[in-house]
Amino acid sequence: MNSLVNSIVFITGASSGIGRACARAFAREGARLLVAARRIERLNELAAELKREQHSDVFTFQLDVRDRSAVERSLRSLPKEWEAIDVLVSNAGLSRGLDKLHEGSIEDWEEMIDTNVKGLLYVSRSVIPGMVARKKGTIINIGSIAGHEVYPRGNVYCATKHAVDALTKGLRMDLVDTPIRVCTVDPGLVETEFSVVRFRGDEERAKTVYQNLQPLTPEDVAETVVFCATRPSHVQLAEVIILPTAQASTTLVHRAP
Ligand code: NDP
Ligand code: 8X3
Image (cartoon, rainbow, N blue to C red; front, side):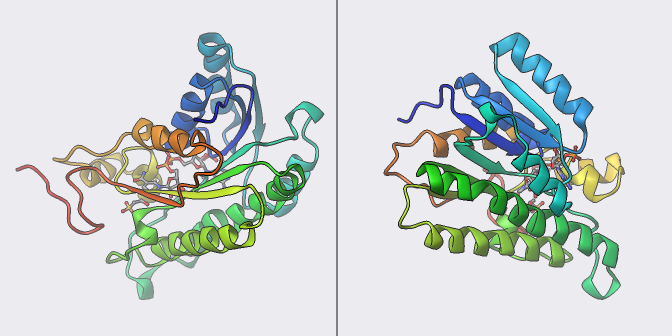
């Protein structure tokens, strides 16, 4: 098992859900944490918690991954002691709406594509060259079961996660002659703020997504992400699909009556 003690782990979208749980899980492994999202107050609260409870070394910065120049600038101007990123968890992402494509909102499509696809690409382009130069690194993209299957009205969100799947596979090919590992962790239903964001704050509608079944927790996914990062260096967990036991596919979910 590879130790993460003092490794630098960069997590995008660490202000909530899976990203925040990953930060906590990597902190327990003794990693140093570089955490980014738009809601900086949340990141600062997380940093205070991790410093207090795990004595972690945490560096927070506000970042909108859709803003290409901000991504480039922030990652170029990291303090020297935070430059050598060992593990990148590209997690920032979202869905908006659940509409038929011909009735969908073009703004929603652009937000999902800009965040889930272009944002992940901008971050990857800024971080990976350093890993290649240092001949060291693990990249873990958070994809989705929606990157393997399409569900009704999931059109554009599913397309963005299929794109993450394709980019992860392509990147693994591009880095095959380096010691860098490229993994994707692809969850099914995880109860986070994901559905509240998708339905623009409609908490009641969001709750129905997880009703009468036991969804994954963000911690379940974070444990798997840490597992990928702690395998011996010659082991690359290319793809992990993690589902609640009551979910067989995007559309086949058993809800207890
Ligand atoms: P949350 O809504 O709880 O968290 C999403 C995180 O992404 C937040 O920290 C948010 O931070 C961040 N984020 C969103 N947009 C941006 C942006 N433009 N720039 C920077 N950060 C951004 O949802 P989850 O934890 O569930 O989602 C995390 C990832 O997991 C996403 O990629 C999602 O697609 C994926 N996923 C989720 C599943 C689920 O069922 N929940 C299942 C499969 C995959 P802030 O708003 O502060 O910027
Ligand atoms: C999130 C999983 O099925 O709610 O990526 O779209 S799903």
